[in-house]
Length: 434
Image (cartoon, rainbow, N blue to C red; front, side, top):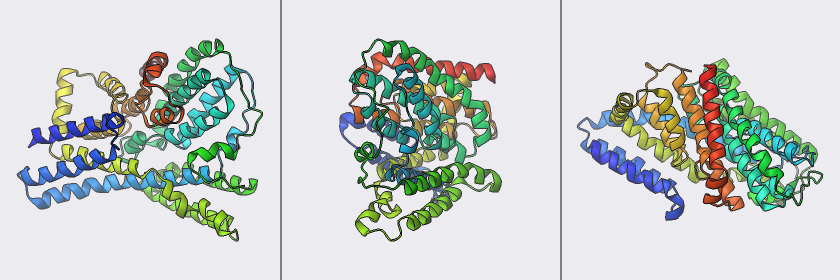
């Protein structure tokens, strides 16, 4: 049975990794292996059906908390974006110095990703850069830096990346410890690439840098939102409400000790109410595209289903003891958890980091590695930033690749070594600090 489960998981994993060549959405194989693994376990596991059902429901409770958190957070971010709220930040970029612009874009993407998430940050920043920088080669370097910055920014925040959210909700890390341990390594992971890209950018003749122009609703039209004239007051209200709603989630969890999805659902309800009041009295064709009911339809549901499928499959491997055996094997052959974490980060550049982190959570118990231990902090950093080493290694990279048509081999030749040095530099700084 265990051999069959491993074969099914590996085949499904290959289908997920080869999503683009096969032209098959990764949610499909993830859902198939999620259901198939549990079916095989129930039929050939040699234990009572009620026991398997109990294990499944116990795991699904944890999985559902992650899915509801992601759905709510994605809805809040989409609502801000639909109201062109991010222009409040981006309209304040006022520099024609290319080096200064590189630092501003990198730092802005870094901190924006910590509050939003790396995928949304990359989409928003790529839209902005396409307007600001007309020279394609220079723009590719800027957008590549955004990918690195967004992934680095998501690593030190419990709501900045799916993997850190998983570790946070799973109880492996806490908000304060995550920030204290990882903000400096994550910054190093960004600063090294900025320093390395700066001399390259200086050699490229930049034909057009236009910070004096307003980065307004035109930039958001390509993000799938209908363009309407939004008053400054309404835009600011939704932006401020949304940011506060996201920031308060870790605060509420710390105070109440309740799972984060409770706080994010409550905050989504508050924001929903605010949106209804803000648009009260408007004509239907103007109001409807900006309400939660319509915005939620634009959520990336296939990605949520992918998370559900892959987490179910990993949960089955955990229940059968396969992941425990894998952890024991790695301990015997490699032995060093730092090296294991470093390799995990590099693997996340080739395959999706979600199942890798889910597998690590199942491999190592909280009894041996308590909350906020070095292992969990390393996994959060490595899985969050290692994906930058390849353009297909993260959701942020894939989004940039699709929007700007960045070639895989161009990124591998020009950026991968830069991203790797940033990744290794951040890892080294973590080890020196802790």
